[in-house]
Image (cartoon, rainbow, N blue to C red; front, side, top):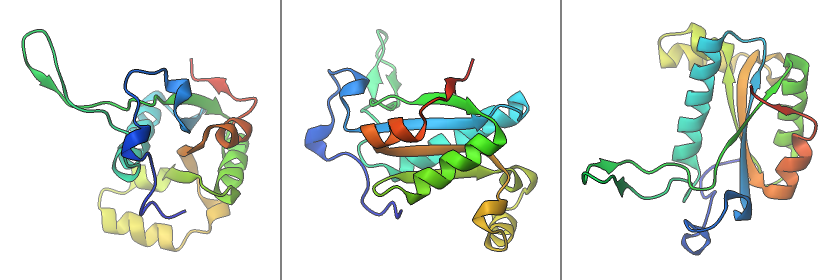
Length: 156
């Protein structure tokens, strides 16, 4: 799905409500076999992509008691789940096939390359079924996302 216009309309942003009331649900799923450092990196990278791609996901800046301004955080929440590599591939396939779902992947090749154009070139030569995924992020209608990730556990 293209991320051209994807996200929350201004009237949907409800900073004073629970995250489960948001129309869209955001879930990150990680390969539980990936080493911790690479796992955290993968989650950070897909989260950065979502923050840029999903309109209205990031709340406004907020001051602390000293007046220091803190950048906004995702107001609609994000759940981080774990999966085996085959489960991750299955969830990705279901999410990609689901209308109205934004899928952001972190293939291991992105962690091996240090030059973005090299990553892009390798990605261009890789079939989707051959992606060695560290993590994926999916955002979409709450009921659809819940079905796609049903049975997966929270990352401990």
